[in-house]
Image (tube, rainbow, N blue to C red; front, side, top):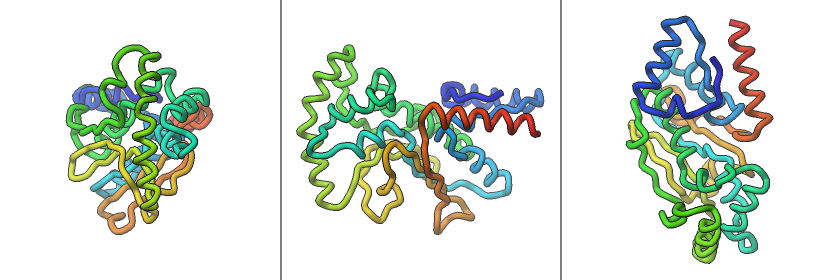
Amino acid sequence: MVTANKIACSSAYDKYKDLKNTAQAKGVKFIFETNVGAGLPVINTMNDLINSGDKILELEAVLSGTLNYIFNALDKDNRLSDVIRQAKELGFSEPDPRIDLSGIDVVRKLIILSRESGYKIEEKQVKVTPILPDECFEGDLDTFWEKVSTYDDEFERKRSEIEKNNKKWRFVARLKEGKASVRLAEVGMDHPLYHLEGSNNIIMITTERYKEHPMIIKGYGAGAEVTAAGIFADVIRIANI
């Protein structure tokens, strides 16, 4: 079984374990590499580390190509509401961009990575710091466009301030000491997340072996072509076993 759908493995932990245990008991391969990072080799790499005796201690990642595009595109001439519309028109975001802006997609991905790392994480345990106030997620899409534009000046003021300090915004997913969180963070030029371009993803994996210098997986983390290629690679992997 090969799937790109994140719902199953990010729902209740008992359901996730039941799926994996049932697949094992029936001798069926259950592969969901493209749940996180599209075609990037994230989950397989983590599994290889654990199966070879390593232990994952910490994860730090940018897992939303949509949000990374938005925060890379912001500048004095492109306000928040402008770049959200751009992301929608370019096909980066969901038809309703609030799904991306709510952070739920990143939460699901972090839950999957946390569970594959050996941590029993439920959605309610992930601490989420919202990008926008609750009022932006109320009502229909037309109401959203009206409300989000009222925050353009505030975001530009904050963006300008962090730019003066040579920092950038990144929507960061993190697992540390068994605790999971997602939030909009400011990162400096010396941080690997700073140089992440366009709609790319990056995953930093700290393990007992890779402690001083985390393993970094980086590249296109969204898009139909790379996701389809990732699914096809999983199918071929099963055929070759």
